[in-house]
Image (tube, rainbow, N blue to C red):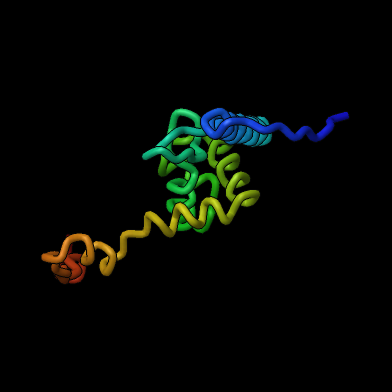
Length: 137
């Protein structure tokens, strides 16, 4: 049984203790998630922790590709050269934590308008469909 304790600490000690508690909480949370999803690990990217497929890409990246394949495990795995169980584990993670993955997807959506805001000189070019012009090939 645990008991709450109130302690007065000087500001530097309190700040250090708060940081340790936050870090330990994150590691416990990540460990629990990794035990639920065997092909998932957490890695740091630009100071933030992200769910990843062990030894491969981030879960949000897999989900982005999987959407193009109608969330089909086999087609997604073939395209990304991943085992079906790796893909399924990532999709299961997404089902459990959709807000987390959807946020990463939104942050990484680089549509033309967003690219144009970053690269003001960017121009959109139309490319003709060459398959219509290549008859008999």
